[in-house]
Length: 489
Image (tube, rainbow, N blue to C red; front, side, top):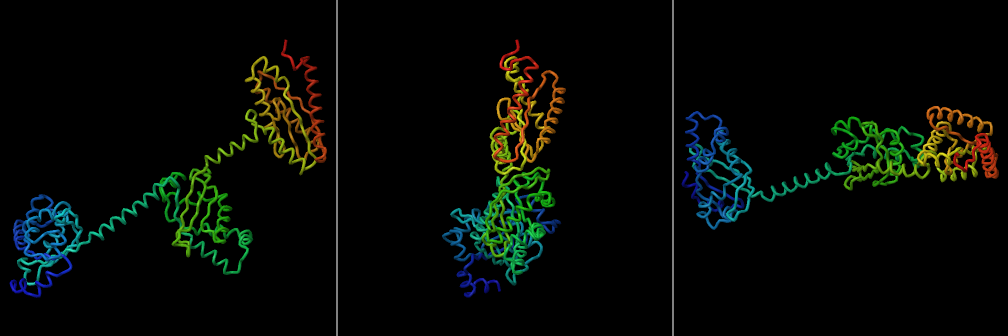
């Protein structure tokens, strides 16, 4: 039977022309080796082979190649079967050996066939990923003397899979380790809600949101966060993705409701790419100012099922801008409003009121003497104390400003002269407390008050307040018998 099967014309013809690599092999020596090991009490073939690499080599040596087809010679770049057999050590090497143990264990367990994916090498050095399938031919189950092995070259598929996994890992690494906070979100339910509103015949969506603010809240709750990257965790102070997502309500709150309403308005108008500045909150409770870019991914325009958000922390920039704005409107030494802000505010009040407008002109007594005798550092300390007094005494909407070296003004919109006198008394009270706190150098202020009823009279009121202040200042120096323009004798 063996002779007629292996030498039959039909078999030879099909074997030689098969489009896959075919090997006819003799495994009888392997079966004898297995029988010997079983007699010696071996039960776990994998463990037995792992204990000594020589045992695996003995199994490989027990396999005898009887015949290969033309596809095999082409695949392995062999001139003929004799050349291939003479170089089998080059074909079966390196990372193939781990796979052989799996094949042998299938035969050990009594299976008449096995399959596996392994690695072979062509004689020209090419690495070949192959899908191997083997079957002990019918009639040879007792001695394994005829085994048909097929090798399918899957190198292209394996390499494509490796490249795909590498590409996926590259994309994952770009996402995870981006220096920008990235969020992948599902907005499909939000789209369904917007479509539902549109189906009701609503055209004025802005008015709809104003009448139904709960709709904004509902849409916020329907956003599903799919993934965030590592920078997101760092930005919001979360130790893990689970921690962040379980506390998402602490991140998106406060001003975010209004920002998200604007985002919904843009989506309603078809703007699937957006950018805006928003405020979120770290889990510590600190506000995080953010520049957000929002984009519905191209393949999900129909359902908004995949949305990418990038968040850049601009908190430092916002603080710098706020500080620059503060410097533009405040006097650095006294922390009061500066002359530029005073001029803008006076112009605004002159045009719009409210009336009456009261003005308190204030001047620090004795600054020149302090500067001349004790130095400008001591004089600056006096000016800072004036800032402390006015900051504690003057509340909004009144405005206290330093408009010159030792000159200050308080603007009191919507306040009559009686109210101005009350504030003057409060300033004097704070001044007394300040002098108690700083007993070394007595602080003295000259103040003048004026009131006007319209914008046309503002300049005249400022002049009257100045004149009243200068009169008070002269009385101070007359009482002290000191010429303020000369140092103390």
